Amino acid sequence: MTDVTFESLGVSEPLLRALAAENYTHPTPIQGKAIPAILEGRDVLGLAQTGTGKTAAFGLPLLQRLSEDRSVAGPKATRALILAPTRELAVQISDSLKTYGRHLHLRSTVILGGVSQNKQVEAMKNGVDILVATPGRLLDLVRQKQVRLDKAATLVLDEADRMFDMGFIKDVRKLISFLPKDRLSLLFSATMPKEVAHLCDEVLRDPVRIEVTPKKVAADAIEQTLYHVAVADKRGLLHKLLRDNDAMNRVIVFTRTKHGANKVEDQLNKAGFSADAIHGNKSQNARQRALEAFRSGDIRVLVATDIAARRIDIDDISHVVNFDLPHEPESYVHRIGRTARAGAQGIAIAFCAPEERAQLKAIEKLIRQPLTVIGTPPIEAMPAQESHAPRHNPHNNRPHGHKKHAHERNMHNNPAHKPHGEKRDGQAANNSNDNNNNRPRRRRKFRGNRNGQQRAA
Ligand code: AMP
Image 1: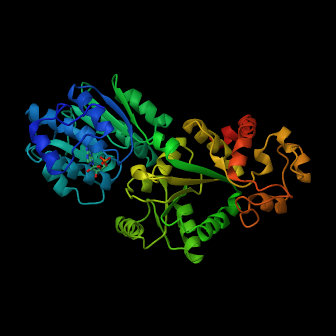
Image 2: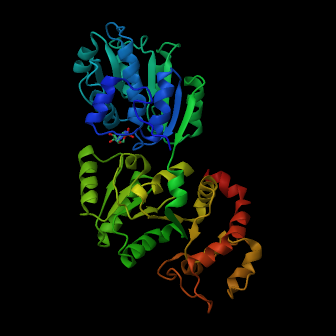
Image 3: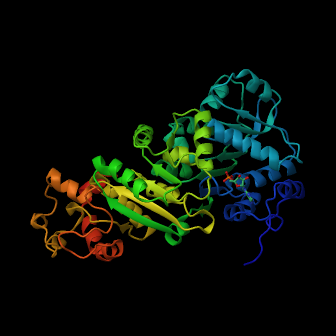
């Protein structure tokens, strides 16, 4: 491999000095691709999550371009606008740009909600080179005519998918309407739901598309396992796994909702497992405390929502548990990428309830491999012809899709009844590999269930 350096990418000397002081010896993959493209003046669509080095990927060429063209914005205006969904991210971006640009003497400021606007108005009075902002407050100030965006010839939209999740897309569109049409636009997003794809079409002109996802990691270094389990039995399964397996010593459990995260955390603590939860409704301090306790090993389980987990950068996570399957298959890849960092072997465990099969299907399609089923799948997950397979189970002969009795559901789904590798109905031990070998036909059959897929999608 050729040795790519920041210098070989065309990064200027004052920036190289700052990078050396930060011990950035080599560009990350997204930096290697984005820096030359942006320096050339190309729009960029970056599919990358936090932790990939995306801030420097757009920040370095942005700083360099602004420093090479020393025009001034004028009162209340900015030459570059960076929009971020949260205050934390905006502050982090601003801090990083100050670090990288410390030898360049560019003026920058931050506009955020939740604090008095007076200082922000004051900071914009004579104009700045770079404005980092969250959408809501910025729109307020633009409407009050305290900020002008007509000189913002560079736009960066960071974590665009999160902007959408948080309901900011309308504000973002409005803000963009104040920008000059002739501009450089850079958009970064960890995932690409339809709404973000539409935004890209509106905002970007012939962009260079750069994708940096942990897909490879997912395929190669992470053991990805799957339990078919009823929603009501997920808690019992999680507790059992934690009880039986000491190797699960630093575990992230993902839930789809904040409420779900609180509930799982509460149940874990009541059962004697040390756990804390992080999600959007927790204060910054509470989140920080939870992360520190998790990092130091004081708590064994961190329960998180996808959005809260974006900021987590913790090594040595032993297991990632997908307590709920995400609606977006890409989120699954991001979740499991939390384990197996730095070349270590990681283990991902997914819990799939009958109503989540469409999500499972989407995940397996994205990662182009089936998850390894542990234990015995429930009857609904099997195709009709396999229902007749010699499993010596009288219930297998009922028509496909037929509802099961409650006791049966327990038998199939409740971990208390069905430990990994158990012998069933006098059969040989049913280990995960055997199961996996039997799986493809089953899965293909299930894919035919379009109704379920469309409902859940
Ligand atoms: P980001 O994805 O921009 O949030 O960056 C993730 C972390 O990686 C931050 O702590 C950066 O300071 C760090 N980082 C970014 N680029 C590099 C690099 N080329 N070498 C070493 N660290 C980096």
